[in-house]
Picture 1 (tube, one colour):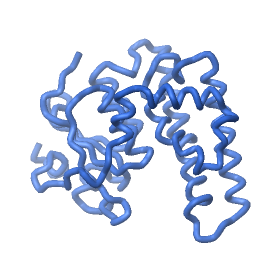
Picture 2 (spheres, rainbow, N blue to C red):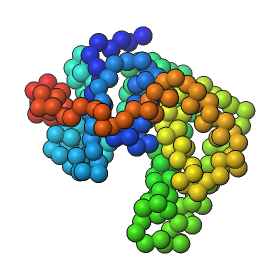
Picture 3 (cartoon, one colour):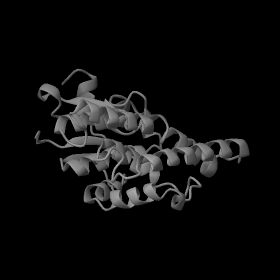
Length: 231
């Protein structure tokens, strides 16, 4: 199994997408350093962060021990999960059939059980004007996605049978069910899966990571060296 000598730099804010990577790193048990990217203050638009994440979104990582021993920066949570799963050979099956199933559910989360729940959050919780059409649209789609997940979890402990990056991708979003106007009792398989996930020490530790206690971007960060061709 691949080991990690130097900490992986995680550029983070405690959102469902950010928590995907803190959970993954905790489950892997590899060293990492959290760098706080305060999206409410616009840190994501700073040049030093755009060096790592050109789409100005968290999370992102810089692995100082990337391919061939050289640093690599990666943005987009799904791509980060795949990279870490590949590097450390855990939670991302090598078997083609099993990996394809995990990829399907990872893409399902990235394309639906994330963006649609995010729109739900916006129109239900934050929009200055409450628009019934938008609220109904995104709450109904959220409930549909929970039904899909509930069906997939029938007879399974985890989304693809064994614990994988598909579960890691989904848990942070599922924990917001109350704010999404979802009665989790209607989806008992999802409810039980949430409890199962929260009982895992690595998941619990990753979900508990705070942003405000982390370190700011440094002048000598590997991310800048990657951007400007110094490393």
